[in-house]
Image (cartoon, rainbow, N blue to C red; front, side):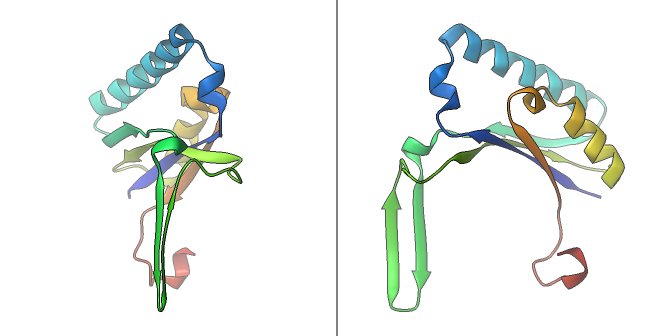
Length: 121
């Protein structure tokens, strides 16, 4: 099965790091991703830009809306993700525990499933 590991980090945390600390964090995540790729368990891994570059769009009937970041109310942000393939739920949870980001952020494990599949909600 496929699972996504979402890296949920405190908003503003990146700004508190020095460039050297940021590079070290990034290198650790790259090494973790490389190891998973070598095992055939990784489909994709990406780091996401901060909230300053984010844009929120909604198209509710009669209420189209665009809101440019940063978002003052945001306490957390999705900082990146790893998309895993061919792992069980328990393996995905174990990989989340091993993920370096678990030291400074929350790693949320989510299975991939159609949005209409009520059994997976």
